[in-house]
Image (cartoon, rainbow, N blue to C red; front, side, top):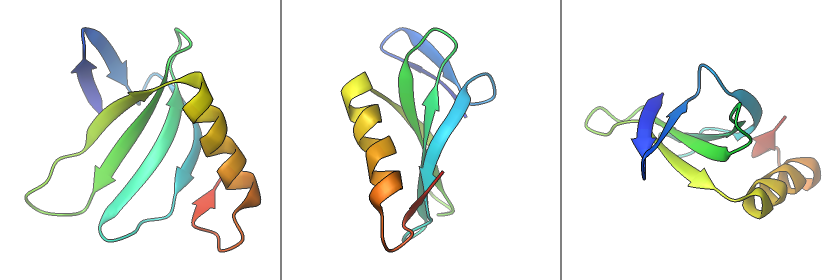
Length: 79
């Protein structure tokens, strides 16, 4: 996924995947760390009329994502 958000270009192909959710209701999310140190979430969908998109997130939110992947008991998240 490649997208410009608030004047910043994000590209999942050039960023490092950190963790992701399992697919739920046609959506899956993946946390990335860009080369410039910015975190963002790619939202992937299998819905025909919807598009994948990117949401920037803070380092604090990224840390919460990583923590959730480590403590998830029902395997909704994975590293």
